[in-house]
Structure formats: structure tokens, C-alpha cells
Length: 309
Image (cartoon, rainbow, N blue to C red; front, side):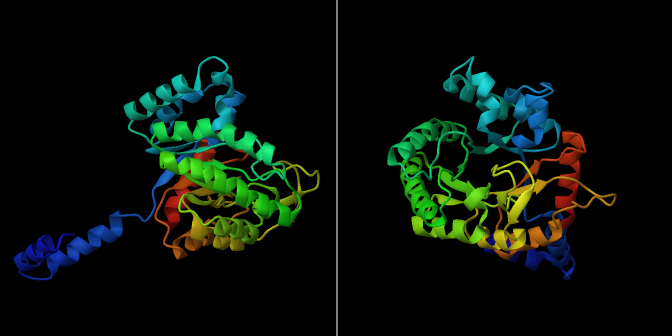
């Protein structure tokens, strides 16, 4: 509040009632975080059921009560076989403006290994990421989320990751775009080591996207994303490791009990950790369960977040 406006309000009050009422209103009605929707929450509707055109993601999000979205690059593969990425960007921008939805970030997958020991492979990956950075800029996003893959040896991975990130961030800063890394399997799910990589890069537009649920370092089948977890990093410690660099947060959910609580993640504890680091950005819902419809899973996740913010 402007000092002059505050003084006027104080002077006009014949008692403390107006000031008390003002403070009460702010405390009760202003939440610390807003909630966005990650497109992966609707991936089955897009990829399997084919009941949602990914170009209509902003429209669907608005219908579900969201005013901010997070895109997923791979969900546009079929679309990009038919139209150029320039045309796709125009369509997405038009849809988001029409439905008054804010574009926050693009999650980019399967565009090469930024952590490869091969410099040529790293350069190829950077080239493949560039179009998404340009798209993010045109959509007025703040970030592009990338993966750090291509090397299993931890020390080599750290060195290679810092190199790849530095080069990509150097390109992205020309577009005013952040490059953010998610804990997303393998070495990147080791919160302490990923934090070390971000510190070694030391660039303002390099950060993290801590995800509540992706802390499996090694799976029984050696897959990065699917299958039973063999070695898991403590998810709450992982959040504490990554939150100092967070430019976005994914509120991952899988399933819920009869009381509406997530069965594998303590959302209250997670949000308390987020708040420890004075994060004031969006919490992005990323429902990834199989037992509920995507719409129901999104709704329950939203209700659970609202319970603690």
C-alpha cells in the first residue's frame, strides 16, 4: 500500500475498526500461491482417448478454472507433422489470449542429451532445444524445462550437465527465457547433486523445477521414468535441495485416499518446504495417476493444494 493511502485510511478511522477490517480481509483472501495446470495432466485425453486437441489446451484449462498453463513439447508431435512450429505457436498464442490464460513454461522432452560426454551430441541437443526457446519467448513464457540425460557416471554427468546448461542458458538469455531442470530420473533425481550442477553454472537464468514426486534415481528395469523404483532419493530433502533455485514447482500427484489426501506424498509438508524458501510462483498441478479420470485427479489435487496455501 502507498504510504499516503495508508495514512489517509488511518486518519479517517474514528476507531481501529477500519484498519482491523482491512488487515483481516487481506489475510483471509490473498493466497501466497496461484495454481497452474501442467499439460501432462491431460496426456491420456490427448494421446490415448484423443478427446482433446492439444491446441485447445488453454481453452480446456480455462474451463477447468485455471488461468495459467505449462505446455509439454511431445504432446505436439502429431500436430507438428502437419503444420510448422511457427504456425503452432501462433495458434497457441491466439488460444491463450482468447481464453485469458497465462503461458508459463514449456516442458521439453526427447530433444537430445544435454549431459552427453560427446560435445557434438551436446551441441546437437542444444540446436534441437532452440526452437522451443524461441516458441516460449513468443508465447511470453518465463521458462523452458529441460532434462539432463546422456551420462550415468555421476562426476562426468555433473561436468557435462554444467557445460550443456551453460551453453543453452547463454542462448536463452537472448530471449529472456530461463532454463530450468526438473528432477526427472537418473542422476537428476539426486537433489543434492542437481543443486551442485545449478550452482556451478551460476547464471541468473538457470534454475530448477522441483517436482514433488520424481525422486527415483534408479529403477529395477533401468528405465528413467517407468517401472518399480530401486533407489529413491528422499523426496522432502530433495525439495529442500532444489527450492533455492526454483523458478517453478510441480505439484505431482498419483492417487488419493477417502479423505482426499495424496497416498504417497505429504502435500502439507511439501508446501511447508516450498514456503520455507519464500517461493511465490505458481504451483503446477501434474496429475499422473491411473485410478481416476484425469479431470477428477486434477480436481482433487487442486483441492488438496488449496487446503494448505
